[in-house]
Amino acid sequence: MSKSDQCGLVIVAHTGDFVWRAGGAIALYASRGWHMKIVCLSFGERGESAKMWREPGITLEKVKAARLAEAEKAAKILGGDIEFYDLGDYPLHVPQSAFDKLVDLYRQLKPQFVLTHPKEDPYNFDHPYANRIAQEARIIAQAHGHKPGEGVLGAPQVFMFEPHQPEQCNFRPEMILDISSVFDQKRKAFECLAAQEHLWEYYTRVALNRGIQGARNSDHKDMKYGEAYQRVFPSVGGQLV
Image (cartoon, rainbow, N blue to C red; front, side):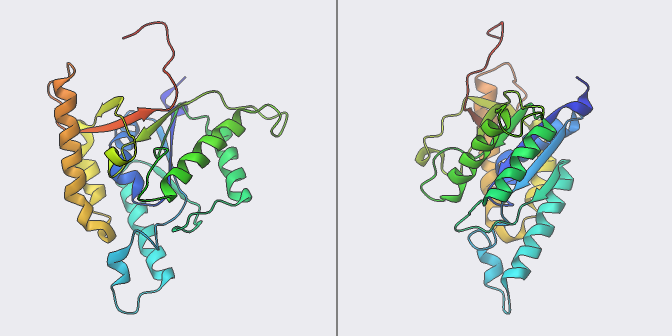
């Protein structure tokens, strides 16, 4: 398989989610020649754009347009290929047509891995809902009886990225990805998200903390920045390391 055939799929509830939680992975794999596809189910226009809603004369369409522009700029910095489903947030609802579109995308891209939200988040019900959609679409794309005659999806690994408050979401880091070489890109992508400026320093600290943990528990002694992930399925192979 050539690098151009390798693909990672990132499915998020809101536009900011791919930057804070998986921006390092996107930039890292894009730098290796992978096609990194990002699907934003919503713009986060209602629940994750409080700063914009304080502006005089603001409207829903203005917020959505601003969040779209921010996300496009951030994705470009990271090297990702972004797509917006515009399904609304707070609450997020995925109709059958959008779900079928995502199934088709799985089969078209045949990603080697999928990054999405954890299965629990008591602070934001859009996030576990996006996890369910991402995983259910993956399963349907594997079914031979769905649109018989099409090539089916294999079994890409699913990694759940770190939520905002992991201790409340039963999140257990099982993989700390070294993103030191691309953290400057991730930080620049942060700075595109003016609607959530209050999170820039928070997620910088998260990356530093995971970098310290990664360096202490591996031979990546030069590791400074990291991203944490939890597996959904066991890894499979012929060796342990």
